[in-house]
Length: 185
Image (tube, rainbow, N blue to C red; front, side, top):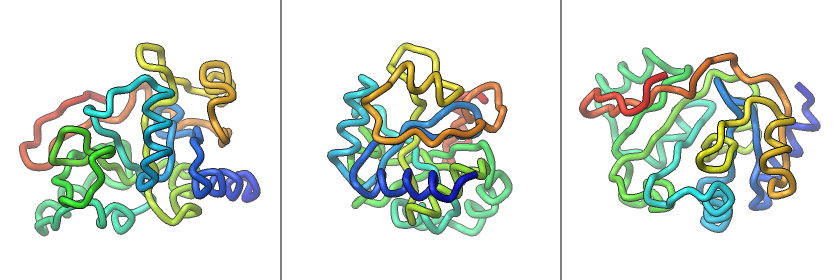
């Protein structure tokens, strides 16, 4: 991994840009989760409804804490058993968590990623990243930097090339409160 490329990607995020980066299964499309304009641009590019909500990925749980309501020790134990790793959880969000992240929900989808490049990118940015598959709605998610460029091209401010984690499908999504699974891995 090139430190220069990592710093360039983090600079693009700090400047309000949209970037693509490898995750556990596919390339993610991301931005600063607190930059409403960047999130609006991301949703418009993907043609994705703002009501659905978005996923945040982080290098560690501390990056996610400001967005989430306080958790019980048993909640922490449940999360720690799956993180870092390819497990996305729906967790009750703080009231101050922006609507553009939660959509019409009272929870937020979050993951502490085990992908080394994605985690390094979150550390370089100093905060979590929005993480949605790098594709237009209805099209297959990109699994390579070349596929990202072909599908999204000049609409992105930076593409951080690197291998995905090799998972066959995007991460499972489970609700922390109910245990219900919404998306199978």
